[in-house]
Amino acid sequence: MPRIALLIEYDGKRFHGSQYQVGVRTVQSELEDALAIFARRELRVHLSGRTDAGVHAAGQVAHVDWPDELELDLWRLSWSLNGIIKNDLAVVNMQVVDNDFHSRFNAVSREYVYRILNRPQRSALLKDTHYFMPHPLDVKSMQDGASRLSGRHDFSAFRSTNADKSSTVCTVTRAELLQLGDGKLEFWIAADHFVYNMVRIIAGTLTEIGLGKKTSDCVGSALDIGDRALSGPTAPPWGLTLSSVRYPREYKLFENEIPSNRRLKEISREDL
Image (tube, rainbow, N blue to C red):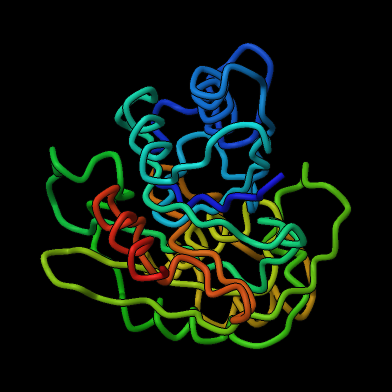
């Protein structure tokens, strides 16, 4: 059975998270339902990781095993799936990968962005993608706090209290707060591993620093001591987007777009 990797994006507002849950709409169930309509059988979709209700994704990765007896035309499959699913979810790219590829277990890092709108009045256009903060923020102090996250640390203080018992040690390769103008702030963070609600708790902590309720030193103290009480509140989900998932270079994942039917025929002629 050929294995297909899928690059997907979604607006998380109307999803109860990415992972399957009984009786509610999720990204996984939506994809599996669409595949079942197209393939006329149930197929299991495996995601690179879960996102919570309300969280968006620009570069979520999944994989599915395609039945041998069915024709595999990636262009037709992607167009058909996008025609079946609602417009807050889209299959952006597809690629046939080795059968040893696993969207979750082969991922080497993930990158998230948390967006804040810091201006006196709310936005009608950014309300579903930015955390609105009308009070002035000390951005330099927030940037100082963000810079202390880089490296290998125990993020127990930035983990939700109802999280599972997985390792809390993460290696952060990027932790950067960008000031884009017009009150738009973006906190970018990349790591080999994330604990539950880690990015949203960091975003809440940085916001507290910006409001003067905490100092930037609290980030280092929270990392060293590991006490959840030293970090800030959990920021709302709609400001968070899973930006990308990275894999070993050998997979050459999504380096090319899906060729159209016409291009597929041209490729076939070139191979003769």
